[in-house]
Length: 124
Image 1 (cartoon, rainbow, N blue to C red):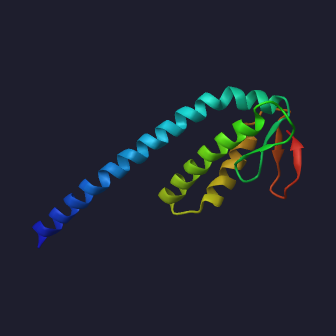
Image 2: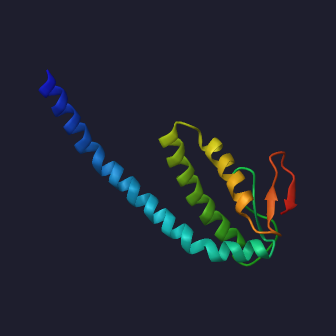
């Protein structure tokens, strides 16, 4: 019986390993693309074109070249990261996003648009 249990654990690990490896590779690729996007995001935030909302996502605040595309790409990646963290921690993507929003507000530079939990926008 003990041998059967060990075999089942080994087999299940063997089948789960590719998924875990793929997930780690996917998150690594997300991290790389998000890192490459930081200068564009910072420039658009400095112009007032992008702001950090209270859900942990970027919002377009004013028209600027590339703002919509940068925000969409970043938000897509953030959603995937939040989902992975939620799955790992047993929470919801909304909870992860809201917690991340608080961190983003704290880390934001002066003059950047951020959204309070009640929905009001202000420049930090």
